[in-house]
Image 1 (cartoon, protein in one colour):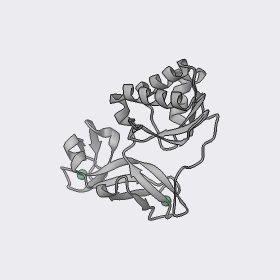
Image 2 (image 1 turned 45 degrees about the vertical axis):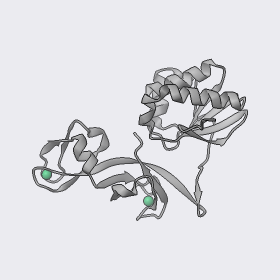
Image 3 (image 1 turned 90 degrees about the horizontal axis):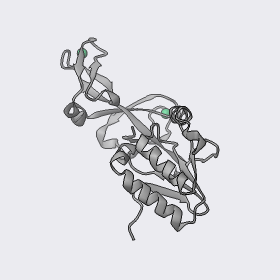
Length: 207
Ligand SMILES: [Zn+2]
Ligand SMILES: [Zn+2]
């Protein structure tokens, strides 16, 4: 039996709690799979209420929202828990919150590693070398294909996919102490502790 590779489950039954596994960006190419997997899961467990924990998700592509509406149309009560302000706002503006419940149920943290909670943290940006002054500057991940301004010399340069691929330094923000964390690309998706507050975090490419 094929396994579910797009989400993981914490509780499975009449009320189920799931969260997305991969970087959410990938889902836009796997919308059909996502719908197929979620509806199979819902059917297998006779799930009447599906809670999707968005604790570590800041953005939901419209393709994923479409999948959730389809599930709703099949008679499953769909909830988003821990939705960010941005996601909640999108749901409100599009009136999708009439179909999908937003932040009505509370879901606590999932991971416990050595008694501590593992926080999944989105990658914020990359350290790129300014072609003008050769200093490294933090470039937000959303600037791919656009221009970034060097914080050192104020010159702007274009942010290419190659530059991002080759960037060794990555940046994230600790959700506990809000310190900017700078680390190596090799530390992506690997648990580490925040140098400032020791919170156990895992930096992921989440868009
Ligand atoms: Zn510069
Ligand atoms: Zn911290």
